[in-house]
Length: 355
Image: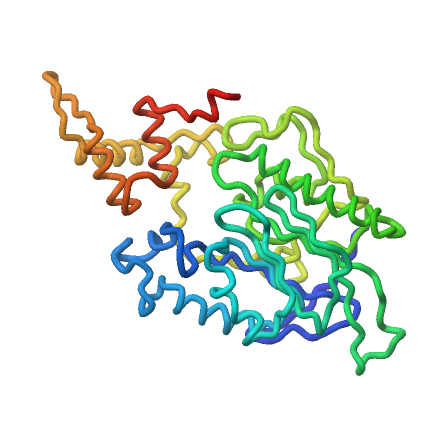
């Protein structure tokens, strides 16, 4: 059986150094960083008005100071970050090296917002070039010996860290493929490094799964397999069974009973799903919008709709749609709302026609 060691630490506190255990911190820092992106501003009131000014809590100057303080306080060996912008990565995260001593770094190779993995070379060595898969970044480390710890307590085994930022939205099948590909990459790398048992690695999987504990990607890790009858977002996530290529399933250490409490929230926000879907349906299994939510959508639509037919039916014109998009996204041309509205109005993605 898989053995997991749990230590109780009273926050805020730095993680103790060890030569046989690696410490990993994972943080979705949210786009925008200093440039590119806008949707994080929607989380603040009034939305979009502050536009990330340096003196506002949504601005990068304020947020990066909080990150510097928290990451420095925990002082993990490895820090996995998600949602960094390649346009400003070097300057936005210069504090990781200059202030906190994370002199090792690997940025995911492609994408508008990417995962990045930092590590302290004074504590661990990167044993092989990082592996880039579909929205997963794999690094492998060996811990350095600490002079104050006896050699008998040290080992030279490899630790694998899989930094994930899985696909968002109604893409459960792709998320499952991404995590399966990432775990498979761990086993392949273990074989390449001539591990004694590459299917039983010292592995930490972390990041943003864009799903709850019941989503296919998480259940794949914890249950060991996903069958064709697994339903998410109203449809099957795989055409054939996917099995985890490890000797043991993985454990969510944040939810272990030894901790004596449920996993803490990452954000303290209102719970809205129960208000948005009918009580006899679930968000992941053929959800049906609640009567109240549909009524609210209709009121919003009618507020924007300027065209009225003879029978009194109101319709949003192209100008109405553009006005709505500017209010919620600041300008026309970005966001899921824009793409969905365009499709409803007859636009087709040329890439879809080629498939």
